[in-house]
Length: 239
Image (cartoon, rainbow, N blue to C red; front, side):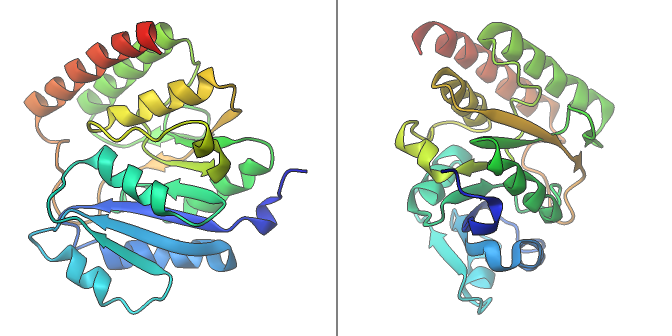
């Protein structure tokens, strides 16, 4: 018998690097949104120079766990570490810059009554991407490319916001290499294994504080885009 959302114990994984302006509010809003369903918030911090890890360490919330990585860097590896160490029967991950509203988490978790994986999507009904038009255009191009080449019929392959039943990771290893392309690979692997995937539309906004690591730099985005495209070709013919 499948568990209902009432019995879900949720682990939320937050990768962080120089997020001192956002982390306390992110933790507070996640806690308020999930209430009794929240088991833990795992902040995986890459030894942020701005002292994000110090703020997390001093929050004083017993449900907040800090993993401070001294000699590792990278989004995918940080998320993999958090997911692998999570204790909940549901794992949610998201950025902690508040561009993704924490209040959307319960909507994703509730859909796990019917699905194994629920993606927070900017490109399905009810979704919205408020970034600059050129940034949205590049994102949509990558998603169309992914859909056509991989045949997964997922509208937001680059979401980075999802709720997943923990049992999924008994059959699919969380990718630990690269940047945002980990999400494309993970969803492709899960689709190939026959897991049920749904998308829930939500409004993606601008980060609340601090500086983006990539959004304002066209050359960086083009570099990532080429990297994504090459890896997608590789996955299509090797997985």
